[in-house]
Image (cartoon, rainbow, N blue to C red; front, side, top):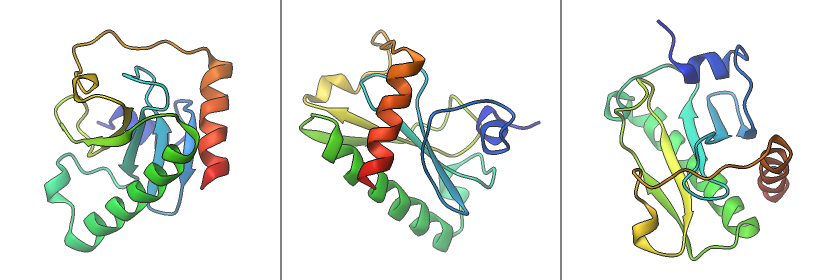
Length: 130
């Protein structure tokens, strides 16, 4: 069975794309902790991040770094944090979350809500910065 991320990669489900190359995709999280919360995924469906072969793993992190640097240019924050949990969706992914304080990386906090127009603007701002 395909994960929700595989369906997004295959354009079966809409998303707010931030950046894309042949092997990776960055999309805005639809249940963000903070404005600009982005998910970076390999297009190849692999459940566990440490099951990714070494070369593809390095390329995934390089892609994430590119996206994080662009996010930092357009989202006002102290840092872009990195979180890998791997339990909520059976498809490896990296959370890139703009933060000012460590307590903002708490997935039990209420999620932020942005309109489709705001999400599109956020995604476009990050795309432009890449």
